[in-house]
Amino acid sequence: MKIRDIEVFQVSWSPADKPEQRSAWVRVYCDNGLFGIGEASPMQGGLASLGIITRNLAPVLVGRDPLDHAVLFDGLLHTFAKLGPEGALTGALAALDIALWDIKGKFLNQPIYNRTKPDIDIPGDIAKARAVRQLVGDGFPLAFDANNGYSVGGAIRVGRALEELGYWWFEEPVQHYHEKAMGEVARKLDITVSAGEQTYTLAGLADLITAGVRMVQPDIVKMGGITGLIRCIALAHAHGVELVPHQTQPTIGHMANLHLAASQLHATKPCELNDSSARQHGVFENPPKPVDGLFHLHAEPGLGLRVNEAELTKRRMPIA
Image 1 (cartoon, one colour):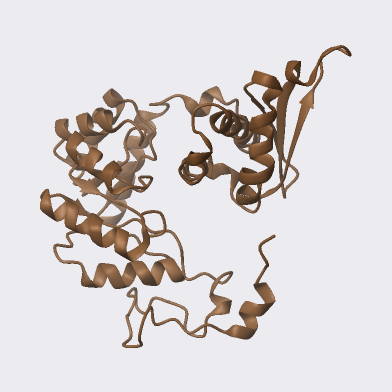
Image 2 (cartoon, helix red, strand yellow):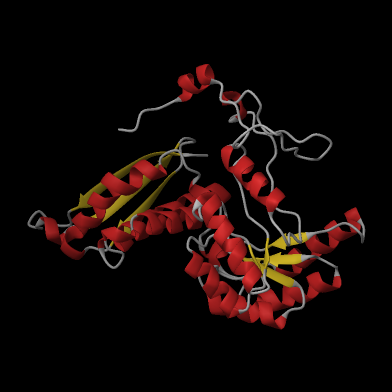
């Protein structure tokens, strides 16, 4: 499911309403027929927020997965912060976020309140963790990604169970933007608590470490590329903190991350890697593919990727 189109408009509630008295609405359409509705702050009719959506935010969102709303929200806020984060921009993001949650609820066939409650199924989550451990055996390394799903108390309860099951680490147990809460969970558990895949600055990563997080997971395509990750590695090493990079892209980002991971001193745990991508690998003559469960780096210069120019030309789209 991808975002196909975004429509912004005002709604007039009375024929006498002036533009600044109208409501500011947004509709987000997906390629599978679902759509969501959202609303921005109505200050001055929300015209400033609607303009930001049209000119700046909508072009970035088209083609993206609407279920990644938290990541999309953070990325847009970071990218367009200089438009003024307190007011028109946050109003625009609010309208889009509400619409994306509307889509998520429709996609899952559930009311939104069922998806926003933390700790919604802790017994079920623990049962799944126990079932996976039983399936793979005691010697197999496992980690548990909570995707920001618990309260502090709920995270500690799940973390204790993961400790008993021998899990290696517990990823983002609480909302990523609550650094103090993340640190509190990390300090109260013996299992390693990790966070940082949604952190975009070195200062933000330092805040997580200061809060008590002992394993950070910045992403190379979010955290300033190779130079940014090198700085993150130095920061983590200086504070005695583990760094295990997060990475979700199967081609260029994957190879950049792989080169960095291969040269990283003090690597302690398996980093996140990607399966082969039939959709994206077509533009490379030598796309990264695992052999017997391992990715191999070659001695070719740079990233080591050879672009298939003919295939890239077919897919290359101009920036309007």
